[in-house]
Amino acid sequence: MLFCFFSLVLVSVYWVNQAARLFDSLIADGQNVGVFLEFSALTLPWIVQLILPVSAFVATLYIFNRLISDSELVVLQTAGLSALRLLRPVLVFGCLMALLVALLGNLLAPTARAQFIERQSEVRDDLTGRFLRAGEFIHPTGGLTVYIREISPLGEFRDLFLQDASNPGVEVTYTATTALLVRSVNGPRLVMFDGIAQTLDLETGRLATISFSDFTYSVATLIDDSALRRVDVRELPTPFLLTADRQMADALNLPLAHMVFEGHDRIAQSLFVIFVPLIGAASLMLGSFSRFGVWKQILIAVALVLPMQIVRNAGEAAVRADAEDWAMAYAQPALAAVIAAIMIALAMRRSTRWRSVPA
Image 1 (cartoon, rainbow, N blue to C red):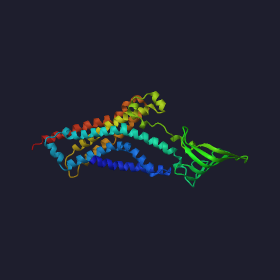
Image 2: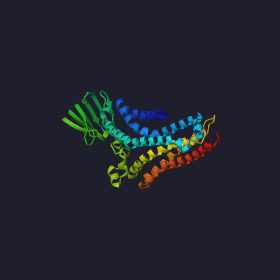
Image 3: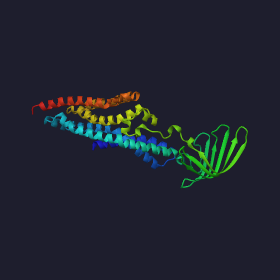
Image 4: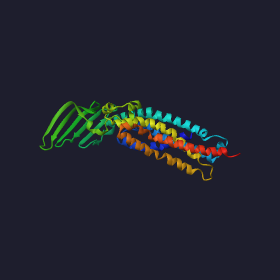
């Protein structure tokens, strides 16, 4: 119950921070609230995966702090329960968290990420929502002006005015009775019907006019080339990442080292969450009942867990520099396992003292 409560609080805080930036970018592009909610939902698996180790750690600290403050832990220890017996449910809890993180990191998060990028690409191509407004002069990019008198419910543009002054020395003005925005392999295109194209040479002042029944104008330049659909390493399945080679990486235009690290890091994160609750519980078991609480032990537990992100960053840097060093991706869970073993051993020694105290 406490784990769910802390997870809800932390996810809400993190989600609000992400949602604020997402809301600004989508609403600024003319998208509706439904698109914003869809994008927000697609980011939740990644956010939950990131928050779970912290929630598990905080929930464990809270529970064992209550056990100590209510003297329940002291009673259990003097009754003969060893530290290993008291930590057994914590280990089971950690294993359940590992399964949940593995499910999120290896299945739900990559699937949601792929869907997020796909929808992002579709929204980016939706120039009707981004740039085109009925009854307004829009300047989607430098040298381009668009005006549409009316946009029908079916997406048909009526009485279109488009002026293209992006080429130096030449200014082209298109007017059309109706127009449609269609997709193609090379990007979105504007198909205009029953209109006139006027080309003005700014140097000579000569004007050329051409009437057309239909004309296609490429609007791919309105889309930032750097934001076009590319394969993201976070959307690829874990088995593919673990077995990737140089040929696969070149085909996807991705660094092999990044693919290798991403695949092993998903497994490493699920292993890491097993030991985080154990470190917190074993650290608090080193304390005893006090009117001032067990803040020293809590600070020790926090001090042991927080620097592990530095270890992960160092392992990531090593693997990204050389894919052959993939074992460094497991540096964080390995260190967490060692620290958990040390803290459990210390807790066992203290538990032995409690059992040896005469009744």
